[in-house]
Image (cartoon, rainbow, N blue to C red; front, side, top):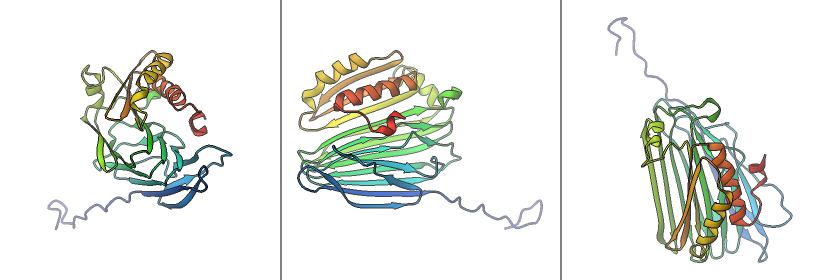
Length: 284
């Protein structure tokens, strides 16, 4: 095909090279109380670091060597927690989602927990830049007596620049099954002028950050009053948080006009609710 003005061939733009990160981690319980690595695989810029611990659960830290996620990048994490094993999965720092000229970046985490398995999924916050486009999915399949504690947070815009999200996209999907039965489903989709949408009282009430804490365990519903008491203790100006429990799980929702205050509240909430310090990377 020729350009009518210049009589030169039109060359299609080459497809942009994108990052494809993949992690697979499998852990089991060696002797009834020590969790060990059974299998680990890494691909692309996705890496896993395993700090040595003298006691307690196995701790795994996800690392993105690319330094952030650009338009069209994909990262997939699969985790298998064996019977009686105990795993904490976190990230080295906040994950940055850069602006996109169209393609959507995708982050997918899938976990399987066998009988008596425990997983604390505690990534640090995801920061959306203006014009970012992200689809994030978290799914877990639990044995009836397994325990999952999951936390994820999103910050809209770079706080140091007071950056609004004038154009962007976020899809956030959670699906949790216990004993093969769907027990928790949550989907959020924001598209367009995200800052204007979050300013609306029925959506965000002026929030610039949001977070969800989910506890799926046999005792989760019975901890509702404890969770509410912790929220009263760690309350901060600029952050609204509330807890509810049903169907064998407990959920805490947080909205913050001040992302830094929300992060501080989340740190205190997680430490108090879990009864142990957060992974060291959270404290740097």
